[in-house]
Every structure is written in C-alpha cells, then in structure tokens.
Image (cartoon, rainbow, N blue to C red):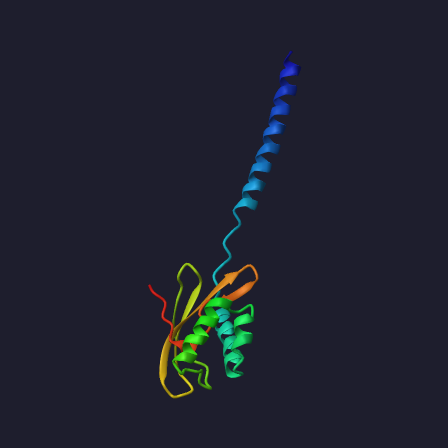
Length: 146
C-alpha cells in the first residue's frame, strides 16, 4: 500500500513539474520583454543616416527607408515644403536629450538652407526591425509634447 502511495506521489510530482514548465514557457512567449531603448550614440547614428538622405535631397528614399515612419515622414516633408523649408548643409547640433518611455528624443538646433534657425525634436525608438525615427524631418521644427 505504501509503495502505491509513493508511485502516485511520484506521478503527481512529475506531472506538476511538467505542467509548471509548460506554464512558464507559455507565459514567456506570450509576454516578450520590451526591447531596451536606444542609446544616445545609436540615436545620433540614426540622425547621421537621416542627414545623409536630406543632404542628397532624397526625401522619398528617406520616407521609404527602415529609418522612418512612411506616412508621418511624407506629411512632415510636405509641410516643410509648403513652408519653403529645406535642410541646411550642416548637421544640426544636439543640444539635449530626453528619454520618454517610447525611446530617445534628441533636442536639435540648426539652420535651414534659407538661413532661418530652427529647433526640433528627433525621436528614435527601437522596433523589431531596428531603430526608427518617428520625426525624421528634423528641419521642420517639430516639437514633441511633454
């Protein structure tokens, strides 16, 4: 009789261990860890890539690249064009940085091609396919709330 109890206890223990392992594994798959926010160096590298597109006047390429959110990028480009703004020849200066939950915001100061100064916020976040600038048209003067 005691031997039967030991066998049942062993089966229940084994079943509990297997069940717990499956539960832990399923919860790990269901709730993936948030990717870490970009570093300042990574955000500045994205800015450098965006500046290369802007210097070349390749706004279509910029907005179609992995770096930018296509629809928002095109809207910002159109708005800047309507205002008569285009990027100046120099990379904007990074005058500060903030780290909202969404990623990293570089605070920029620069000069447009027509000589007018601007300040803008350049937000970079990490996505499964890489780093992404949600406000790539830095010369537009976009300011993020909060």
